[in-house]
Length: 462
View 1 (spheres, rainbow, N blue to C red):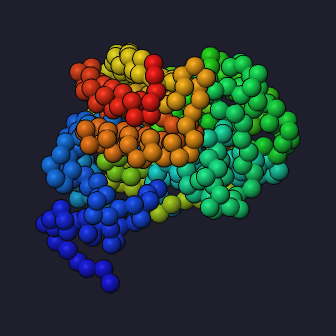
View 2 (view 1 turned 180 degrees about the vertical axis):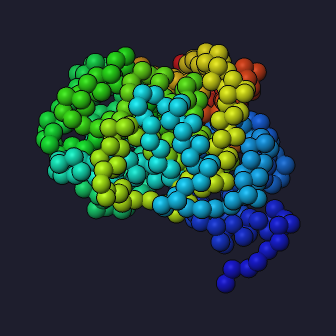
View 3 (view 1 turned 60 degrees about the vertical axis):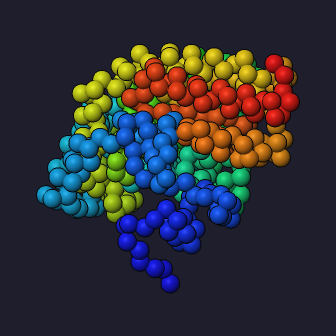
C-alpha cells in the first residue's frame, strides 16, 4: 500500500519514495539504487534548474524541447491560476469556452496559409494521433476509403500511441508493441552525413514519390515529416526538399503533415518550422512550446480543405480527449504567446543562432566529433570513432559512451542535454529561446572538456 508523505520530505525520503512508487518514462528503472540516484529537480529560473541538493544546472534541453520561454515566468503561471478562479474546466466535447475560442483564432492567425482549424489535444503524441485519424476519416468522407497508409521517415519519432508509433521509424520502440496499426511505411531520412549508397541529396525527396507509387497512390493517406528531424540528431533537409515533397503530395493527392511538436513556437526562429523552410502543409501537429510546458497542451492545425468534409450535414470527427482545450491550459498558452511577442523571442533566436552554431562548430577539432548539424536553437553533434571513415560505435561502445560516461559526466558538471543513440550516437542541445551569447559560452565550457576526455578514454586521435 502506498504511503502518504508530506511536502516536506527530505532528499533521502524522496529518493526512497521515487524508487518504490514512481514509474519513470523511457527509463531503466532497475538501474536506480543507492549508488545511482534518480535526479530530482525542484525549481527553475531562466535557463537554469536546481536539484533537491541545491546543485545548479543549465537546462540545455528546455526540459524536453518544451520550456521555450525559460523557467520561472510567474505571469504565465498566474494566467492559469486566474483562469481557474473563473472557470476551472469545461470540455470541448460539444461545448466551447472563451479561452479555447480566442486561442484557436490566435493560432490560426499565426499559422501559414489556410491552416485555420485548430483541434486541441493534451500533448504531442495525441496531436499526431489526431492527425492520422483525421487523415483517414477525411479520405473516407471524400470518397476514397482505401487511402489509409502513412509515409514517414526512418529513425523519425512521432509519438508512442499506437497510431503515432506506426509512423515512428525506430525499430526498438516499435517491436515491444507489435502488431501495430497497419499502414505505417518509411523512406530514408535527410541525414546528409550518412546518405544511402549512391544517393544524392536531391534524390531524397524522390524516395517519397517512389514509395507512394510502390504502395499505390489510392492507398496512401498522408506523408508525415518533421521540419528538422529530432531522432538521429537534428537532421536538416537539403535545399528544395520540402518543396518537392509538397509537389509530390499534390501530384498523388496525398495530405502533407508537418510534425512540429518540437519545431514550432520559435525553436527554428519562426512560430512554425514550415515557415522557416518555406513549405505549406495541409496539417501541422504541435505541442510543447505552445505553452512552454507551463501546462500540458497540443493541437492539430488543419487546412480549410481538410476541415471541409467534416463540416457537412451530420458529420462529426469521431475523436477527442477529455482535457483537450482545457481552459487553464488555453489561458497559459495565451500568456506564453504574449511573452514571445512582448520579448521579441523570434528575433532573438534569429540573431543569436549564429553564436550557437559557431560554438558547436568550434568543437570539430575534438577527435570524437564527426558532424555538427541543426537549425535555430536545435543543434546536435554526431559522435564517431574515426572521422575519416565516419565509423560509428558498436552497441557495447555506445552503451559505455552515452550511458556509462557522457550523460553522467555532463550532468555532474552542470549541463542537461541529450546523449542519444536512436540512430548513431549524438549529443543534442535545444536550450530555452532566451539563451544569451554568454550562456552559449557556458555550454561550451562543459561540452569541450567532456568530449575531449571521452576521446582520450577511447584512444581517439585527431
